Amino acid sequence: MSAGNRTPESEAGFSGKRLLLVEDNAVNMQIAQLILNEAGFTVETAENGQLAVDMVSASEPGYYNAILMDIQMPVMDGYAATRAIRALHRRELAEIPIVALTANVFREDVEAGKAAGMVAHLGKPVDVPKLLATLRGVLSRR
Image (cartoon, rainbow, N blue to C red; front, side):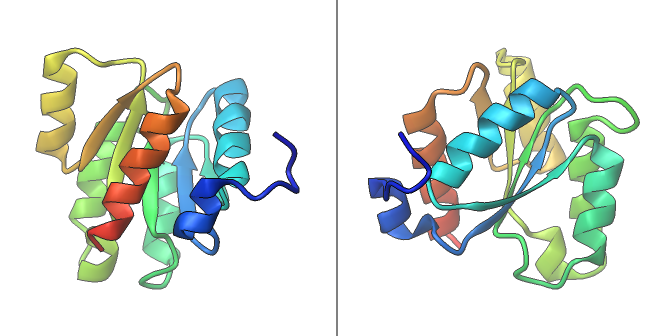
């Protein structure tokens, strides 16, 4: 699929939506960013959870429509970053939907994500239709 092609996903309303992709693996980040850009998203990236918390804290409400969060990262893992975002004093920022995008897909991982405040849990390698369907569902609830 070339970058100039309009996909059904971008026509379904992803154009103009901004995601924060939090991923410490450069190859995984590049692949996910390409997939999301092809679907019409604007994507910003953070290499660890602390950077993600800082970026969200400094943003205006509505700037990020959702966050895709890896779990195992240096500096601050995805669970801690999610808890920190959920604890922000600005309610509009604390309520940004956060979706786990991780190789950790056992039941206890999904439960830990929910307990931290994640709204969905997706496994790696990325299942593109499932990723886009999950994002469509998450964004439609906002």
